[in-house]
Image (cartoon, rainbow, N blue to C red; front, side, top):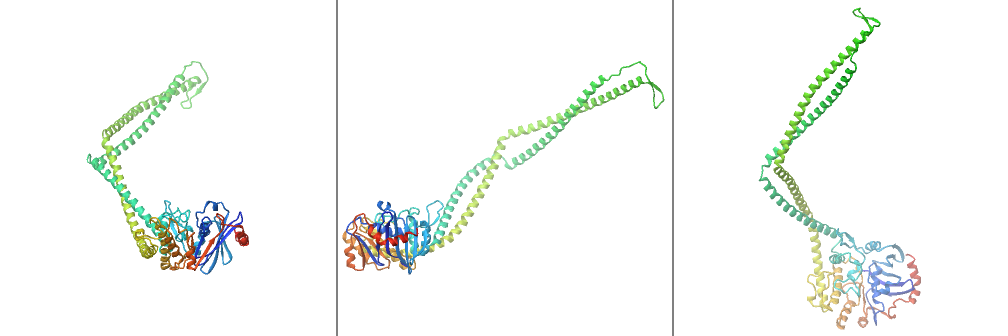
Amino acid sequence: MNLLISAITIVDLTNKKAKRICFQPGKNLLTSKQNHLGKSVIMKSIFYTLGAEVFFPAPIKRVNLFTYIDFSLDTHQYRVARLKNTFALFCDGAFVEFFASCAAFEEHLSKLFKLEINLVGKDDEGTIVKCPPAYYYMPYYVDQENGWSANSYSFDRMGQFDLPQRKNSYFFHLGVLDSSYVNVAKLHKANDKQISFLTKEIEKYRTVVETLQAGLDETQMSFDTETLEKAIASRQAEIRRILSDIASIRSTLIEAEDTKVHLEYEKEVLSRYIKKKQPVLNSMGGAVLECPRCGMMFQRDVTQQLEKIYLIESLHDDYTSISEKLVALERRICKYRQKFEAKQRVLSDYESSLELNKGAYNAYLKSKATGQLLREYRDQIAADIAEIEELRAVNSGYAKLLDAYTKERTTVNTTYLSKLGNLCTHLDVPADQIIENSEPGTSLVASGAYGPRCKIAQILAFVETQRLNAPELITFPIVIDSPNVLEQDDEHLDSVIRTLLTWDKTDNQIIVASIQGKETAEELGNVNIISLTNPKNHLLNSGEYSELETEIVEVFTHF
């Protein structure tokens, strides 16, 4: 399925100037008698209009540039217009859709071209990214300024992928790789990375375990760990019991002392009250009262005296009782204090004993902590080993899938190398200039003027291999700008141009821009020769804009 370009229109909206170039489905030669007439601008504009980023010269960058391209694909006629980073798509004369960004346009292009190229980005996560439109056209385009370099930077802003990923994109065109390959390769690589990390972690843990175990063995040789552990456990239990007894005795002692304080206070109050209430004998007469029990008669003042005497006696009795209680309480308090002090001495003895054995005790604690660390590290080593085994099992399945891709890639590349060898021979490039096991997109290392011829051989070998291996996939026009670079002599330049303009191994449209080659094209007779005769640095003109103004305005209204 070939994409065939019929015309490219370049417009300066500000100054109302334009240029339209028409192409034939077969071979096309864009030429002029001198340089700086705009050949490269036309060549750059082809894939720029289709979404790629190119290296426009400074004068064009200053222009309010508006371009649109007409092409046929799969029985339909399309027109794509670009204004800065926005696009409009037409199909069979009808407007289809406006796209506000290159990313949105690329999404539609992948459906239109029935081709999706996913590559792994340079970020730490290795994010899988759908490639920009330039990767659709990269195998078919050689830019004048940068396309003939070793790594063939024909398009701008392609640094988001490294060279191996860019080379992988060629095999999407050849039908070898697809999105599944990228996903599997990413997962396989991530698992390999994790296996490597876990392996290093295991080695680190094993080194630590070995060191700790040596220290633990040395420590355990100095004492019986089991016996010391039992002794420590017994001593700690006894200390807890003593502390409990001390707390109980202290509580009882405090309670007894509180009771003592309370009784002493009561005794003091009684003492003061007894002194205050001493009876005073009074011989004065008074009223006579009869005792209700015995019937005896008493004077009132004698009755009052008797009441006071009885009260004092009662107070004396209370005072005596409290004094006796205080004596008993003193004995109890003394006993409690003795028990408290005895327990304190026992506790002090245990603490002194622990202090004396502090070295052994600390060594025990250290050995216990070391043993726990050893168990944790050994558990981690076991977990890491299990994870590595699981990852290797998964990677084994991935490896089988990747092997299938690799075998197909090798088979297709063998075909490519065969075609490349034949073309290099045809273009007078020695065999030693071709890298052994070279692949499509491989950097050029050929010396001097061999480089451009190797590049041409690479492109033609690629499209020929694509036709053999994936004839159902889309192919694009071969666009070659200025093949006369690096001092090609006339004989070899004629050989390059003649090869391009007579290429019949595939039916790709070929567009070549060269200041030389017009005579060869006229001789061949089947080449569409486009000669530029405009003044230097004035490709666009007002006359063509006037002729195309109605069409330009109609296309522009969709932005």
